[in-house]
Amino acid sequence: MKVLEVKHPLIQHKLGLLREADISTKRFRELAREVSSLLTYEATKDLSLETVTIKGWEGDIEVQQIAGKKVTVVPILRAGLGMMDGVLDYIPSAKVSVVGIYRDEETLEPVPYFQKLVSQIDQRMALVVDPMLATGGSMISTLDLIKKSGCTDIKVLILVAAPEGLKALEEAHPDIEVYTASVDSHLNEHGYIVPGLGDAGDKIFGTK
Ligand code: URA
Image (tube, rainbow, N blue to C red):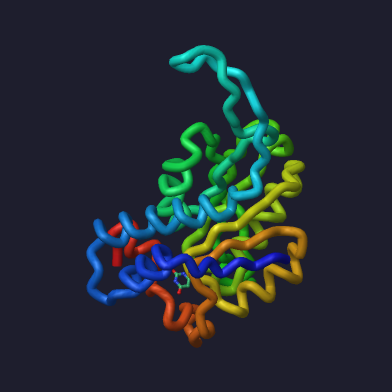
């Protein structure tokens, strides 16, 4: 599994602002969206191009356009929705495939409860988004699900990842690529990433 901790100064600056304890819902949303756009920029740098001829102001010219596979964004409910618009800012025509996962209270296993995938997802590159990769359970379950539908070209965008989650993801899905703004120190006893961002879902939705 390829893990890219993107050290671009704009990403690192915005990540620092996201870590502020007293950040407002509005600011958290804005920054999460901006960092998601920048991660998208990084994750799409190998998309292939083709040359096409268009009518320019002085006659026909050759220009480049994206060739090959189209994209589907896959937000994992609910916090993943906070990254979706950041991806769509750069890939406005991408289709959206939504996945909902909950954790069974008894078995602690992740259980998919909602999925609405685009048709022919096997023909698309999937950009799966979730702000926090903690234990990796929801992400692994989501990737199981979209792979079952035939999707093979998968990149994962995460704001902050825990080493424990990355290890679990690597074991389950060694073939994917992960783009993250930070690999943090560890998970605490409550399953929160340290130093992390706190509860990203609550911060995005303004709930507590
Ligand atoms: N989910 C969060 O929102 N934050 C964490 O630190 C871990 C999981």
